[in-house]
Length: 296
Image 1 (cartoon, rainbow, N blue to C red):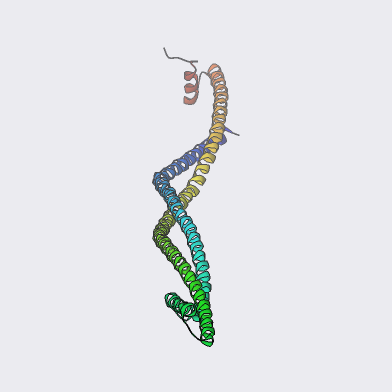
Image 2 (cartoon, rainbow, N blue to C red):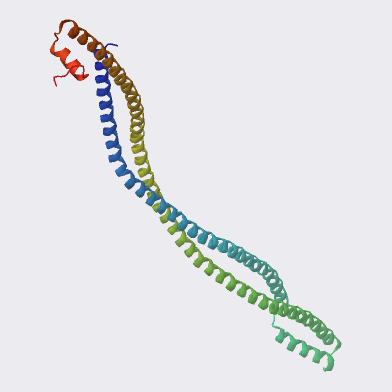
């Protein structure tokens, strides 16, 4: 390259370096503006994510409380069902006994006390009364009939007494079942309360998560802007470094070229001065710069 070409190339490199430095400063300014909002966006996102975690923690406590209550309800329902099964068994047994008792009472046709009196009367007549044989036979038949009815009535009374005990047990079991049902109702209300609270927490959680995702998306958008800018800065800096290296080499070459030219101009000026004693102003400048001539 000629000296002129070197100078033109040096000026071109300087302009390119200046332009790239301008682009770097511009990109740094843009990144700075975006990074000012990054902190706010990140803090808001992290705050919302913390709210999501807090909601999850509350939801876990609420869900566990509800599930524990539901397990108690399930256990109580099983106990109530077992109690109801006992009631049904007692009731079936009672119905069978009642049917047997009613059949016996239908045969007896009178209360036990009345039959006992009638039997005692017929027995007295049969044993002590002076009656004809035919009447005695009739009395014996009546005594036999009343005795059979009396046995039926006493068996019916025994069944009735047992029925009273069974009905008492049924009432006690029914009271127990009712008490269990009341406890279940109370627990069901409590479970519903926790369930409704859980739904509210989930609603709050979804809103917080949705908003957090929105801030996260905005953060990603910011990084999509910043990352290319950062890469362009790195690329520009690398280009500037290469250009500075090339510029330094060109400046060194220009300096060397100028030194060579200066040496040649000095030789020509000295030769001209020695041979003719005459010189141009440029020749004079060159000789004075090298102290080859002095007016002292």
